[in-house]
Amino acid sequence: MENVEIGQVFREVADLLEIQEANPFRVRAYRNAIRTIEAHAVPMRKLVEQGADLTELPSIGKGMAENIEELVNTGGLAILEELAEEIPEGLIDLMKLPGLGPKKARKLWDQLGVESIEDLEEAAGEGRVAELSGFGKKTEERILQGIQNYRTNTARFRLGEVDELLPPLIEHMSAVPGVTRLEVAGSYRRRRETVGDIDLLVLADDAVAASEGLTGFSGVERVIGAGGTKTSVMLRSGLQVDLRVVPSESWGAALIYFTGSKEHNIKLRQRALDRHLRVSEYGVFEIPDESLGDALGERGVASEGELVAGETEEDVYDALDLPWFPPEMRTDRGEIAAADDDGLPRLIEETDLKGDVHMHTTWSDGRNTLEEMVEACQARGYEYMAITDHSKALAMVEGLDAEKLAKQWIEIDEVQARHPGIRILKGMEVDILKDGTLDLEDEMLEQLDVVIVSVHSFFGLPRVEQTDRVLKALAHPSAKIFGHPTGRIINRRGPIEIEIDEILGACAEHGVAVEVNSHPNRLDLRDTHLWRARELGVPVLVTTDAHRTDELDLAHYGVEQARRAWLEAEHVLNTRGVEAFLAALGQGRGPLGG
Ligand code: DGT
Ligand code: CA
Ligand code: CA
Ligand code: ZN
Image (cartoon, rainbow, N blue to C red; front, side, top):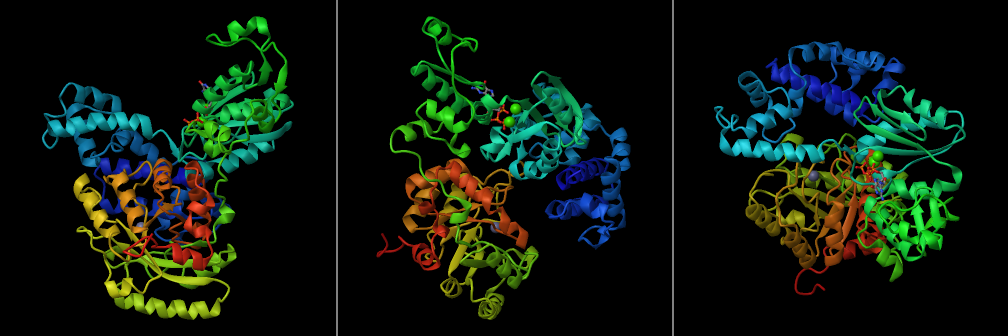
């Protein structure tokens, strides 16, 4: 039971309690606990194993600690079972639809007998939802639209969640006797921001043993199918795992096939046919002349014809006159044509990063002190870093006003003197206020090395107003970086409505860099927008927005998104040394800019 799963169970309890109209303090206790658990670097199961006192964690009281222990030790929670007997579980899904909170879910249940998304779809389709007080025709339409979106999106897991769920499975499968090689393929390997299911490939002496190895994993809830070389299971977390046992002479071909994307595979298949070859998950085969007609037909021919390549990915691509493609590029966005023309770009790597310039400390809502963050950045080998705490508009997190910021500079100077091995830049993540002005006085802004401007409020403004608001902020001469530009939280909160092309155009004009916020819940900007940024010549920064020292390690997620947009080190400003970085930041602004 990993922290994400504990979070899932607690969220369910909190949702059900809310529908039940339980004491709001009780609900909040769960929600606060979820935040602590999901943010905690060490798995709760480890803490429980070690007999640690969980109540020492923030927001974890005695009752919550007992819940965690119960979950870890038994895999279930009695309170959840009790609630599930009183309230249909399907109501929880209802609350994942936009605009549907516990009160509305309760009303739909009480008055229309709605117990699931399917019930709701039917009721809304018949116009019965619009007739309820507090709903109306517009809400009904929004619900129907929301159901559609829900079906296409929410069944997917965020990459960061998968990275938490996978290690115990990998560890288990690696220990299965006879398994000599193991690789996770699919969208996970392409580092897509969300993952539908896990495609696990193994090389094994004994396919049956490998299959039984998977079905015997402690995290398995049910077996979906098992037979031959393919086994599928559903984990308790809701994540599906498809296992395939692959022969060694086909390993590379299978890895390519199951890494996908499907569109990339289709392009490879066409290319093979142009060369009288046939490519499948078993390898690249010569097509005997007489069967050419069949091979071009619907399903291709069976595997007669000589095996040309298959053992490694390099061999397979080489047989098609192609270089090896980094998985992030295998999306059919022109990678094959690029290989034929100028060759592939040399994608940015994590080791190219020379500094991280978006992070928080205990001065605002960070967990670690300024000096701890500095030491952690130094431990990562960075040449420079920027401290960018929140500005005062974020009162909840005690954002800094001018006076406090000036005090922070004194501390930065002191810490800098103690740590000459890393350059500490003075920065701030300044709120873009509702009217597009910045939440800090100009004379302070001018003294900062790094000014990130971000939206943290009024997420719901209409498109024109939101775009104008951001454009105004970007035009401020001190604005240097646009932080988490769309504000989305993957699977939780949609992006703000902005005209992204216009915004990126303004960034290019004013020399404002856009951030790839590396937090796997954000990944903002996303790959397609970064692609556009590259086309428009907008500089990019890969930053972590770390609120704790260990979050500095999330940088690789940002790098992976950047790679999906074909970014090279030269496109990303914080791959440069500190002087070149500072010179490039804000370049292109004003009459002298280029
Ligand atoms: P996901 O799981 O929705 O996040 O996305 P993928 O890309 O992991 O897709 P999945 O799990 O359905 O299939 C894994 C890979 O298998 C996929 O990336 C490419 C390959 N594949 C699946 N179906 C087809 C197909 O119909 N044609 C071809 N050429 N390849 C396929
Ligand atoms: Ca998959
Ligand atoms: Ca799959
Ligand atoms: Zn922020």
